[in-house]
Length: 509
Image 1 (cartoon, helix red, strand yellow):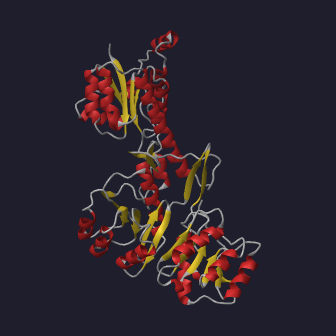
Image 2 (spheres, one colour; image 1 turned 90 degrees about the vertical axis):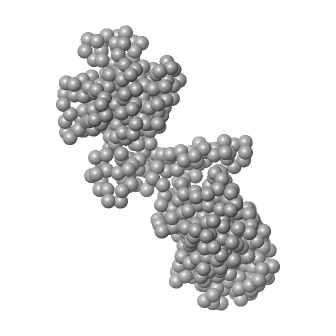
Image 3 (tube, rainbow, N blue to C red; image 1 turned 90 degrees about the horizontal axis):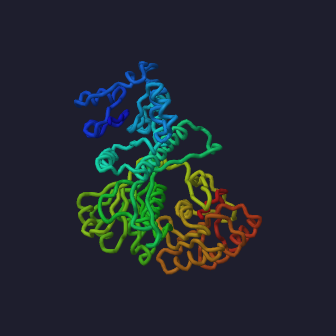
């Protein structure tokens, strides 16, 4: 007994071969417009949809499949005698397979020159309607939305294994596909910052070996239109990225994008352990390495300039998990790639001024969404609140410290010069403990007498200022805003410390 398949696709990959195999399985092929032409050009006999409906396409193709003879043929329940009799009485042939993929809305809006009118023309109406109808009636209709499923469908039909589980699997894929399609459209058209309903969609990039720990399964999904500042999918060498690798690499990339001058970030467990800036990337590496030679071992390195051979030779001497750079010289790549497991990633930093506007964090039962923290006060906006004014070198160091501390887990306190971190204190339940950790890490380092201290939030007490003063810190930057700001200012004046307040907090939980 002959069966009917309706094929109407935008992506015509492997279409002709699929149709020919369906014909061999005794399917009649019904098709529309460009799909019909492609099949005919490929030597496949096709019935036009207008022959089925008895009605020509109209409105420039906007209306062609929206007809009872199509949708009744898809939606009729095969095990319902009344449904089947109604089809028979109306002269409607059941449709047993629907292969549809949708107008290329995503590909259209990815083009910078696309106008709103052009984007709207790529909103498919008939395609989602047919797919949803077929997926709803998966017990009687096979739905195919992905060309990658053409051969599995043919194989299942040949082996008579197109059972309920197989059909339900394909139907679920349809609903994921149409939901993602609608999400893209709604996000494109939405102008509100926080609309009453938020529909996000992600595409699977890869399965991961495990999550944060080896007993946790994990996968990596990315936005269908990725951020221009992205580490994915530009891995050039090394082992596959893990769950923790991706998190750390993303944190390092976002941090190195903060800096205009050559910069090197060493990241461990989502916190910087060494940050260096200089006139060259080699010197910046030296500064970052000297920041914490112990913690950089096994770290994730991000740089914002091409890696040259001299820098690569220094990196090669220690164990590193990941190196991220906008480019590598041929010699540098050859040096680093001698270690087969090191992951070498390429990241385009030319769009570093266009980071994601929002960030999403999942919580039990929901999701938090907020604007990303891109706010950094510039030096002219700093408010000096003490009697002592910061020197020019201290101002540079204070600015540098601000860029670093906003990427450290709260409570966050860092000690830096104007070119490198000396000590990083993070994640403590009170600020004085973070200050003690940062200062203890900084004390043995050369150049300590030029150090400043930066805090991501205000000092609730004057104890951090007092502790810093007793360890020769000469300048401090913090947001201010505590009811006890005057106590911290008085303590700074007591010890001759220059203190700058920015008015901008940078918590990172």
